[in-house]
Image (cartoon, rainbow, N blue to C red):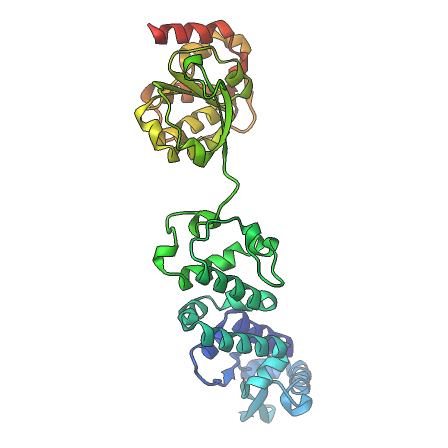
Length: 389
């Protein structure tokens, strides 16, 4: 026989499955909630008569007839050959919304949910579909919902603000609140703002709603003194400024290691970009790179090839430097093992690069690695000399 604890579990499942909330949001009135349960068979009644009697007593003790709220029980008369007529539950149900909510301890939460939902839909009817599809968005944010709507209203009044989040001034709302609730705000703003105010393809909150943000810093050296900027050859620029550069360059070298970038030899009409790691993908925004010869030099390991592949997703003409089997073989004594290798061949590698990638991998679940800084400097100079000629 079902227990009060099991009834509570089933009722809470109705709540946590958001059936209650969707019913309210749809405008429908409360529907009596019937608790599903298995009825007692004649054999069970005979074999467990004493236990069933005790369970029935507990069931009635926690029912509305005893507590004044909660579930109700309808009984039916069951004739048993050995035991005679027995009154057993035929239906267990919550007739009123109050009974249901008090029993599961959600009365205050439900009251707050309904009040906020009504207020929200009065202010922003367009959110009806959002809340119907995602009632949890409101339910999980009851304590901060009014603040979320205030932020959303600010964006409605200030589309594409082009300021930092830190500069948004709202009573009782600081920038940390906005930072911590970007996921919830994204759902609201996508529904409330016109398409012209949203960069739909942008993944970050700041880009999506045209806010300023702490951009990737691009550090580079100009390898030809004749193209120095105001006499400067070692510069660091925010990505946005880097994208606006107009320099008489033919070659752009990109290297993973900072020291290699600092020590990179002079080369005519060229720059070297360094210390980006997997952030090389951010260079895709610099459209002017498409017209330059791009040469990438990373660690001769699986992650180095993964970074090369990521860069080539944006610039298909990227060449690799000192990332071949010959370099790996010429420096056998300098190779070490790679702690956490990439197991799958990156998509954007040439046939020769794929072959080198496979050479790095071992069937014993470890991989070889030749770090950039281990390669003798003379080999770098020799490569660049061959490139000039």
